[in-house]
Amino acid sequence: MYDFNYHSPNNINEALDIFSSSEDPKFLAGGMTLVASMKQRLISPTDLIDLKLLNELNTISLDGNRIILGALCTHDQISKNKEIKSKINGFSNLASGIGDPAVRIMGTIGGSLANSDPAADWPSAILALRSNLKTNNRTINNDDFFTGMFETSLEDNEILTSIEYEIPEYFKYVKFPNPASRYAVVGVSIAKYDNEVRVAVTGASHTPFIAKEISESLSKDFSTNFPLKTIPKSELNEDIHASSEYRQNLIDVCTKHALMPN
Image (cartoon, rainbow, N blue to C red; front, side, top):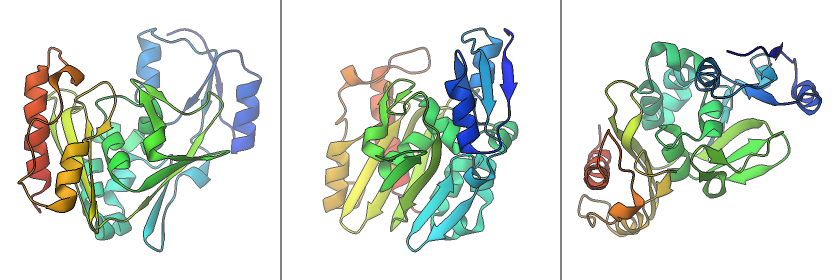
């Protein structure tokens, strides 16, 4: 690991001031990816700006039919929150299936979303739900947030502050995990709001996406009678973990399991 300057600001404005005065800074949330990348010398920021003291980004609240998550909420915190367990237990179950206890205690939902790993769990949930993501200066619709592999619409000097979503009538996430990392080889989230169903997929491609044909089918008939193999193999990943054909089949299998109530 290369030398770097460490900062621990007390508020967002202080964090932004440090960022603007540094040569090549990075914001640090849970550090699950950032610190590992630094250890491998894949990146070498001059300054790390640790956001852990920004307590306003570490809250969970209920506002009518919407849940508001601070971006620094950990996976463990989300998995154990009573409001989330009561209102949308599938969201809690997703959090409890991320990585291992150490990752869940340190890793944050905001850090995971900002990192935009194509095999991470949270992106499919945020895409499936009626949600938006707030930063220090704007609100981003969920459909506009993920732009590519490890890429989002966040500007370099933007801090993700909260994630808000409408509580659905039904939500469930199912993944086929890599046995070592617990990342999704394929993961599927289903969110149902009255007659609208959104099916979002992670792990299968270079970026999370909405399975449009399956979503449209389930919006008309919320059952396992949906069309199969609707995602072309040419649009899916092919690697040592799974072929594109295998991932194509896993999308359908995970979707069927996600349609089965607990």
